[in-house]
Amino acid sequence: MNAPTVVDSVTALRAHIREWRQAGLKVAMVPTMGALHDGHISLVRIALERAERCVVSIFVNPAQFAPTEDLDKYPRQLAHDLDRLQDAGAHLAFTPGVSEMYPAGFATKISVGGPSRGLETDFRPSFFDGVATVVAKLFLQAAPDCAVFGEKDYQQLCVVRQLSRDLDLPVEIVGAPTVRDIHGLAMSSRNAYLGATELEIARKLNVILRRTAAALSAGTDEAGGTEDAAKALVSAGFQKVDYVAARASVTLGPWQRGRDGRLLAAAWLGTTRLIDNVEIPVA
Ligand code: PAF
Image (tube, rainbow, N blue to C red; front, side, top):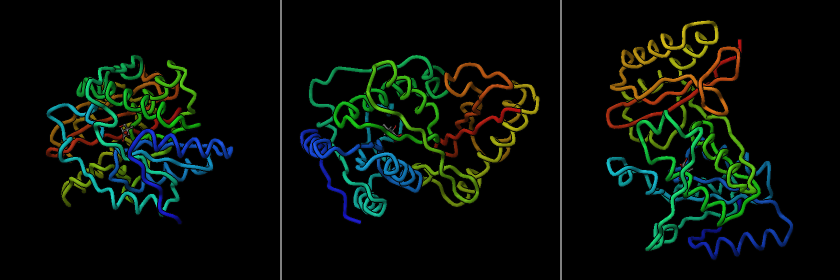
């Protein structure tokens, strides 16, 4: 495969995309913060099934990190990322600097309601404003036909769908299944922070979630089931559980047994915060 072309300005990005459009080619986008792993590569593959050209953005977005969070230590490994994109067949990598995305005087914020309420927002109040703002910018910069987001960040996927619908952004949002290791641990750039013992514990997260989802589906009381799951996570070695919650799949409003649902969780292993989610089977 050819190496992807790398551009770091909006002008150059638009010039490439304009050429593709003039040639009648469909364009898919995969927004990322880099530190690419198999989960991201699966998004690129899905993008290439839907469009002739794939642009991947790599931008560690400061607007979605709180001052206390891991912006500085977030893994940055551009050479490795470009190798992975070459293997996957991506055509263009958009790698803007902070001043390209947020030039001096930048003063706009997009705030999505609906699915952004609760869950992550209870613990990271500005997170989805940061995500929505940068995703809207990326969509307006690249004007892709579709964009692929992983279900691993399930609430983010729901928020981006809402954003796109509410602002009439002409971008089809495609959700992609979570890629997991052989133990079921969801691929995440933050897994790189985990030592061997922590990895063993991290692998219990998906097991506990799947067990709880099955129990909820079979009739276990929602409050009791999710509380038991939080206790099981602590017994497994997680230091703190931010939430384990059952929600309606699309709106992320209250879950009703017999309807499509999702069980979502966030928990801490040392200084690393992991999130995951699974479908609640409809009994
Ligand atoms: O999921 C991510 O990597 C980020 O939140 C995204 C969507 C690229 C926005 O910065």
